[in-house]
Image 1 (cartoon, rainbow, N blue to C red):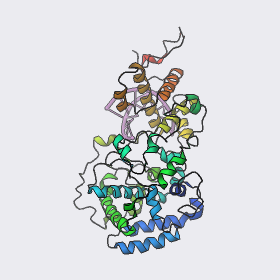
Image 2 (image 1 turned 90 degrees about the horizontal axis):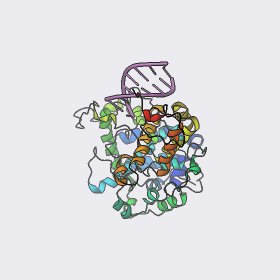
Image 3 (image 1 turned 60 degrees about the horizontal axis):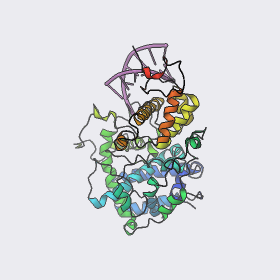
Image 4 (image 1 turned 180 degrees about the horizontal axis):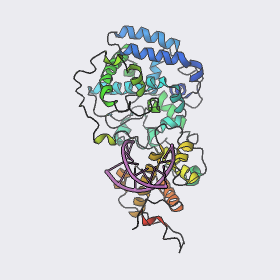
Length: 410
DNA sequence: CTTAGGG
DNA sequence: CCCTAAG
């Protein structure tokens, strides 16, 4: 039985199984949602002490079938492998680790608000893939990792990709998302089962207590950082299930669901709007880029698959058929990514062999396989962009229409 | 509304 | 990632 009283999927860590299970909807449904919502209200209230919290949690989680699974909970989402979020928060070094856990916990609880979103995070791969190649972890951190958690980001991740699976393997009309990516669940599970640690067994009250403090902090941030979200964006976006680590100061990490919960009068309860020392930052300039999520290798692969399916330019189709699970990634984004990939593939070809490391900063270690594929597709489908010198196998003709003429060519 | 192009 | 112009 998993943490939520549901069956545990055989190959997967219990903690994940609980969340990925599609039956969340049916088994727990409203009660879960309500409880979580209530709990959040409760936790937001600074007046309660830790004891109260404990008892509350005891009740709430019992009803949810979560009894005393909190420990497992935190273990499952042990975030010692996460990079620092940077900015925003300043905690003592010992608090950092715990703090990160809270972040994850936040993500989970908030995510529960939207069952569909949990649904969206269905596949384990979907979650696991959120970390890997783009997750910038220093090598020494990797080796120093006490739990061996990092393993799955360096080795276990996407078997075959790094080992050059051969394009045919995945590019061939593959399943749009996941399923092909049953990322060595063995290893992952193993890591998670063995990550027992002494200081992880802090009293729950301590844990939650600190969490509440953070909640209050977050509340401040809501007024500023989240202001953008509430404009034209769809409220119930899938933002919530996005546990991915971010490098910069968190932003979208303040989930929209929270905003929903406390939007009205609640938001004014504590010290919300007095002097927000959080640097007003009236999103005038630099945050253009802040909202972007890095593309996983997975997504890139889907993109390439999608293009080989529908061809270049059918961004909407590609979005619907290969990225329907991703709330973000609008057709335009996909196109942009393709644009970048072309650039990358071009660069890759240009300085073949040399400056391999320099490119790493530009093109995030995109496997040659993929770049190769990209180049193929690029030559297949004429895309106005790309100054790619076109591979032209034979073709003494049609060079005039080829894409190395760039856009205007005038 | 979907794409292309540019910031 | 965002915005705008054009079909």
